[in-house]
Image 1 (tube, one colour):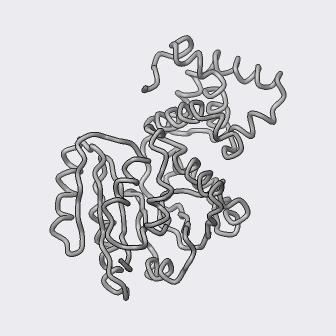
Image 2 (cartoon, one colour):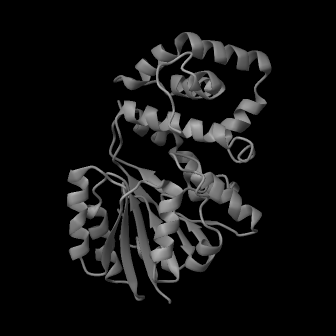
Length: 302
């Protein structure tokens, strides 16, 4: 059925403000629409209670899954529940700051359209903010068009429902990270083009430094698990491949000797982006040792 389904996966995050922003814009568009929010096994009572008000809003539905199934599976589930031909996926921690956001999508006719993000809400002591802000210039529509599959992200994109059902997200990506990279690879292999446009959502809510480090580490474990499949689609893997073996050995040793100290610095009030890059490389290169608790005390999720 012709129309627009706005689909928002969420986990332990209250997104009623985002839903109301979208509803206000959607009430002015010329096609039928719906907004569906899916709780992916959320167990935070405050955010779950807040999101329950979504069911009282016109054209809006809240779906609650008891078990957390992961970022890939929840998007496939949302697509299966959608009624309309166009699916607009939005991460729950985004905000709408442009009055023509929905209209701009509706005036495109590509099978997949990536609108991008912009970074707002200055928090100079926050590692996630510093990291995203430093990379923001690389994520303009012009830059993303240069490598459309490598620079595809799921925070803000539209896709036809029929295409999404034929090319679902890979549910093996159960934990944080790289499900979007794998999806971009799937689209490329299927000969499906991605249109990148300047239609960003605003990213302005950032987790603590320690929380971001935990997510980064989980993403690196995901990358290691699927390293053979993502070799040509991950900049970190490309970087590792390009480094000479003596330097790789040095990075492994630096992490083994100073990994805990670097992590403490990154979790503090003045995190260094240079050290963050070193930490990510060292963590990835020492993954096998990390699994067995040889150099640090935590064990990754299975």
